[in-house]
Length: 143
Image 1 (tube, one colour):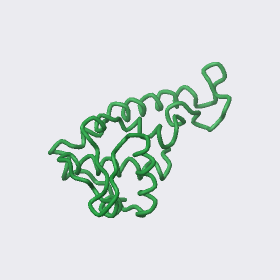
Image 2: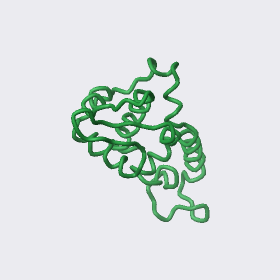
Image 3: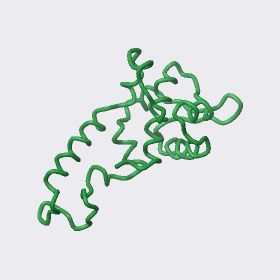
Image 4: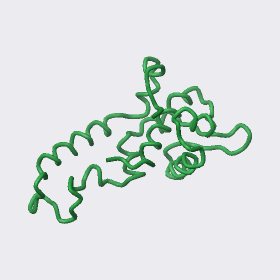
């Protein structure tokens, strides 16, 4: 359901949110290693998210990425929409362009409920939730 790019983006943003709460910058090598991602690929994804103001970046020897308390209020749904668009929350389960309440596909009603549940889960989950001390050691972010 999520693109590979979006999966990497979510894992990276969660990792950075967890580890930058004290104001420290997290370098790209560390992010890539901790989420088991190709370094150049995740760098490109994070630069894109930085341009969209989901996190801050800094170049140079002590550079890296940082998520402020304000940015940590971002929901996972916001990140998904920024990377993959709203297809996950609005699209047809069979990929039909003409599927709607008036012209439903065979799984329209069931899939509509599932989309709503996913929207709720991802929409109610913010990066700030991953900054809580109890979450720091239990989250698995590697594949």
